[in-house]
Amino acid sequence: MTFTLRALRHRNFALFLSGQSCALIGYWIQQLAVSWLVYRLTGSATLLGVLSFAANLPVLLLAPFAGLWSDRLNRHRMMLATQVLEMLQAVALAALAFSGVIATWHIIALTMLLGACVAVELPMRHAYLLELVSDKQDLPNAVAMTSLVANCGRLIGPAVAGVLIGRYSEATCFLINALTYVAVLVSFAFIRVRPQPAAALHPPALHGLKEGLAYAWRTVPIRLLLMLLAVVAFSAAPYGTLMPAIVHEAFAGDAETLGFLVGAAGMGAVCGTLLLASRRNVRGFTRIISTAALIAGCALIALSWSRLLALSLALMAAIGFSILVISVSVNMILQTIVDDDKRGRVMSLYTAAFLGVVPIGGLTAGMLADRIGAMMTVLAGGVTCVLAALYLLRQLPLLRRHIRPLYARLGISAE
Image 1: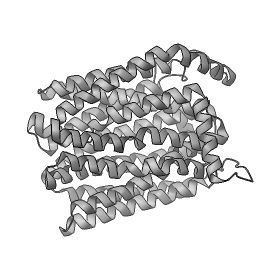
Image 2: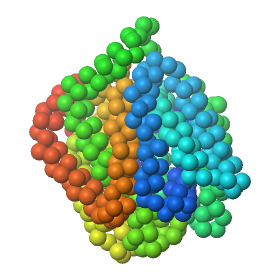
Image 3: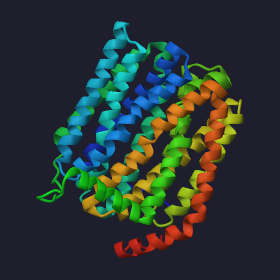
Image 4: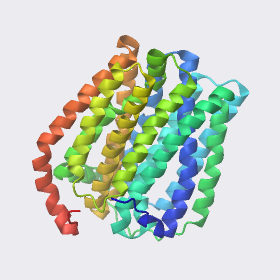
């Protein structure tokens, strides 16, 4: 299997990816700095959960509406607007931090603002990709390449943030994130897209939401995959929320230790993206998803017992690899099989099932960690993830029976 760059032959997608490559490094620099600053100011794992809740609650509330908007509004303009607002959020964080007046409530409020932007951006981005690549055959590769850039940022950003916090301050991280959006705005200035045709008349918003939900529920592959994704988001993904507490409990480490551990998860995610991008199509992804969920659960269980930094780095890479493979594989399958006129709404459900469930999992994990410890909380999440993986493995015959006719209709053959 060889990694393919075929989506880059589309000029608009190449421009979009170039801007995002800068912004996503800045995003991960800021994410680590925010969580480290909150834990440094408060020492509370519960507040780390509150921070995660504030960041992702808007995704749960707004993503379904954003999906509806993406099926009706100009996606290019909406994407540009979200990028500007995200840049202003980073500027506000940097100004407060450099002035020395920043407080926990400032961080939580601005994190919620960023979450609202992301809630609108992500479903819009998934639907916008089709306008950028114009050829539906290249869409799975575009999804994989977008994920690759995101996870390269996740690999580089935390390690850079750890060094910057140790030598300078969290404020420097916020400033650098704000500056990366300059590249994003420049890339958008050169993108020229032909908007996908939309219906001249739209049903009422509530009817449109119900239609999207009904379509997702009655389509067995969409229903089962989104259910697994939601369980993984609740039980496995919150390990990221607890990372400052894990570093403190298991290693008595500092921001650099945190940066290397989060970066290891990013390295695993990059490897997962390369694996997915090397595949010709999405056939066989259902077994890959269930296997990845099993690996993620087992790695989380092992991480809860590990007190060796080298072993924990390897386990973090396995966790990052597995969660990435689950989330992106589900994304690629949905992008392939969903009807075009419901694409935005289904992808908003995907966003809600993953990022929207994270606030509930993060808040629950933070509260549990203050009572039973971060490592025991990670253990509980790992066990839950293993049980979900075993359930999906049992449902594979049903899943395949419903998904194979969809692949056949689309002309997707086995690799």
